[in-house]
Structure formats: structure tokens, C-alpha cells
Amino acid sequence: FVFDTKKIDQLRAKVSSASVPRPSRVEALTALIWKCARAASRSNLGYSRPSLSVHAMNVRAVAETPLPDNSVGNSVAYLTAQASEKEAETLQDLVCSFRKAKADFSRNGLKNLLENKSIFDIPQSIKAKFEKDEVDFYTFSSIVNFPYYEVADFGWGKPVHVTLPNYVLSNLIIIMDTNDGKGIEVLVTLSPEDMAFFERDQELLAFAAINPPVLDVSIRKNESPLLISSL
Image (cartoon, rainbow, N blue to C red; front, side):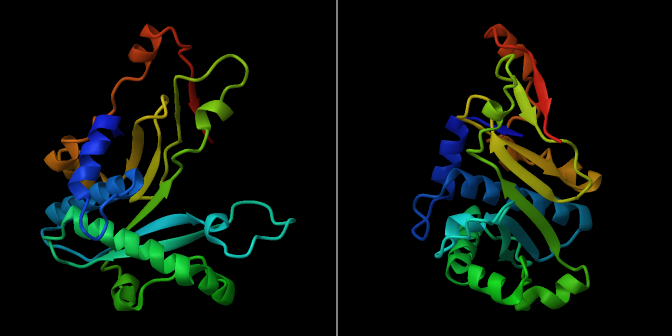
């Protein structure tokens, strides 16, 4: 699903509220995808379930004390935003939930990570249902602003399109830049039953294009028709 700059700006304006007057692009897209995924689950099951959206968080960006010089690898923890069984939760509600989760993590998440040695905590209010598999669980990871297209230039030109391989993990959402750095591409993995409803959601389609061609546009611009898949 691809969102161009104009549609992203329209979405950000739609999801803004007094609590979050200037939502980021990722916050706006997260709310939309989460809302539409929950609607797909509800249509498929015939009833609403509580849900968690789980977001990979770069610990280096929020650490108050710099990490040791000899620390290597990804420093990642996960923050969780929660939505109840209510069907009427708006995009603004979900953005506020996500923003609150980020604020809570910034205050307490790193401390809990260091003390509990756990990168992920289930909220107590939903833990029992989670353990009984009565909660929809969506994992989000944003790699927006990561220079994939520059890194994938191996000397024969900038690739037309960089993407990630298929994932077997269900309910996984990857958010990344388009090749011009202006739009955003969202890779969504849902069950076939949920995807059948999700990809027809009119609220989603008001902002997103589904699988637009990448070769035709780029070749007309005399770019190298090279596709890169990150393994």
C-alpha cells in the first residue's frame, strides 16, 4: 500500500486533535492501518476484540545515558498501545493511544527494560485475555528515513524499488519510504480472511494505492529498472 505526499498530508489533518495537533506521518499511518485491520478482524469474526499495536522502538534514540562504546547491534525494545473492544474508536483516539504509549516508554520503558531484562511488556489490563488468545496483536516497525535506496546502490545505479521479503509472521506492518523519499510504502501481512476485508476498506483506499506499478514510472524517467529485495 503506497501513500503519496498529498494523501499523507490529508490524513495527518484528518487525525489531528487537540491532544495531538501535529501527528507525525508514521503516527497517522499507524492509526489508519490499525483501525482498518481491526475493522477487518471484526468483519471476519462477527464481533470486536481488544487489540494491541506493538511498535519497535530504537532504544539509542531515547536513552538518557549514552550506551557503552562497545555496544553493538540493534538496540530495540517494544512499546504497546492498547485499544478496547469498542467499535467506535476514532483515528484520533488511536493516535492519542500511540502518542501516550511513546510518552510512557520515554519515561519508564528504558528503566523497565534494564531492570526486568525484557524488551516487551503486556499491559496488566489485557494480560489475561492475551494469554487466552482473545486479543488481536499487530506488530509495527517503521524504517522511514533509513537510507535503503542509497545503501542498495552497489555501483550500477540507484534501484527502482527496494522492498522486504515475504514474512510468515501474521499481523506484521512495515512502514518505509518510497524511492523518491516523499511518499510512504506500507507492507501489510494479515491472514487471508482479514486481508480480503482490509484491502477493500474504503477508508483505507481513500488514502492508499494498492500495489502501484514501480517499473513503468521509473523507466519513463530513464532510471535503471533494478529491483532489490532485502534479505
